[in-house]
Image 1 (cartoon, rainbow, N blue to C red):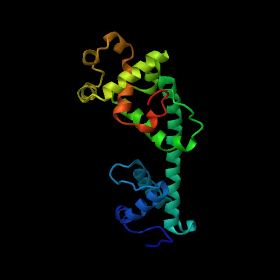
Image 2 (image 1 turned 90 degrees about the horizontal axis):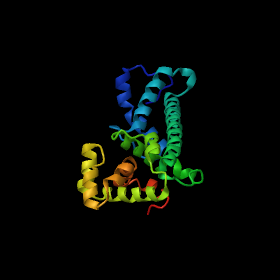
Image 3 (image 1 turned 30 degrees about the vertical axis):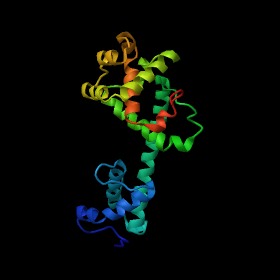
Length: 217
């Protein structure tokens, strides 16, 4: 199809027929295939395409070229927004004791895989009512205490029964952990938010984020 004027058919029908164009444009911009079921970027592209239909006039030239520009513009805005959120999250994680290192040095990494994992980690913690602000407030202040909590978090993540209870109860099963790993409940309670957060981190295998934590192998 080639339009030098606004499409005249029913808009829903036109959008449906234009799905291959929307998917191709979005995939080419992102450098990956997009899923039409639950991909945030596809939803943004779909809204942008509808916006292009509304704003198009003959003075803007070929419709498809104009629609492509609108879609790419909206996708760029979304990437910038996510980058700002991720940068803020990096600072919050550092304050929370995760000790993200050399963030400003590896720009490409922080704008791709690492940032994606940070955003996913932030969303994962929401189901436990933990924000990065809470994590910062509740995290151990001393390095030895923090390192010990990280080791406990790893052991929790590696135990199928306990990590299942973590997700089922939405909290740290302190008594079960104390009995199984022979750790006093007092130690667990002091760092329970941090231990739960690191357990989630390891369990979800946020590899790029894990290797950026100082002292974690």
